[in-house]
Image 1 (tube, one colour):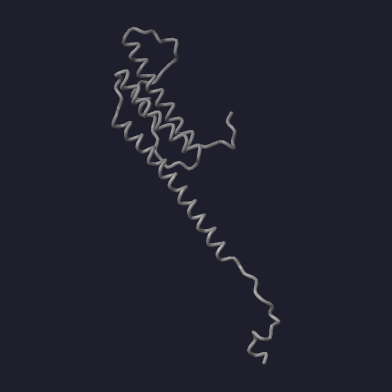
Image 2 (image 1 turned 90 degrees about the vertical axis):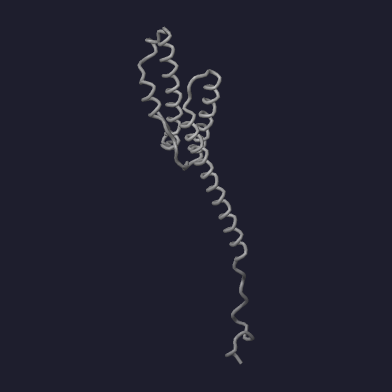
Amino acid sequence: MSDPKHHNPQAAGIYRAIALRFYSRYVEARENAERHGGDLSGYGSQHDAREADERYKAGEIPESIDAALALAHFAGILAADRFVGEITQEPVNDERDAYHQSRALADLARWINQLAIDELVEQERRKKAERCQLRAVGSQDNDDDDPDAA
């Protein structure tokens, strides 16, 4: 059971995309094994490769550190999967993966940029507050300051 304090639907969705990415590759490998005579009947049911492939996606600006980390993992998984595809000569959808990877990195960069902007605004706010501190005003009883006192 998950801890409600750590419930983060956005991060969970991105990690779900990663899991579905791996599942898509698993389905693809399993179909290849079966096509070559491998018996994988004891490994549970599966969706077809297209359905598994269409079920994963990511792409939105993260709203938390957990979601940002998940997005960075997602971009890394796409890079690693492409590298594995090149080694194994397995077909990889380069255009789709490049799109998802660049979008994940761009969304992550926008989030980091917003953090940097927020930090600069806070620094400027503190500087302004320091410059505008209230200064003690002299006593009101000084007759020299009152033109009507004479």
